Image (cartoon, rainbow, N blue to C red; front, top):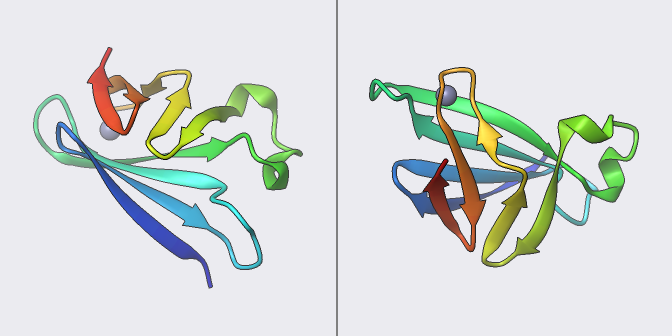
Length: 93
Ligand SMILES: [Zn+2]
């Protein structure tokens, strides 16, 4: 059983931090948002945490701060949605 923490970062973006069973910190984030055309879309990123050490560096996001949450680098979804998560807010790129 994993646990989820929902964070509304504004601009129609909600982060769902997923902590797998047995883990002490979230390992991935579901990014609920709207496409540039206004339709619901969901992306996923892996976080650069101890549990993900086997994943390639290029496929992990750095957690610069957990609270308020700041991630690096920017998030680009296949739908074209692109922006930054900084100090708990969505900042369009
Ligand atoms: Zn999208």
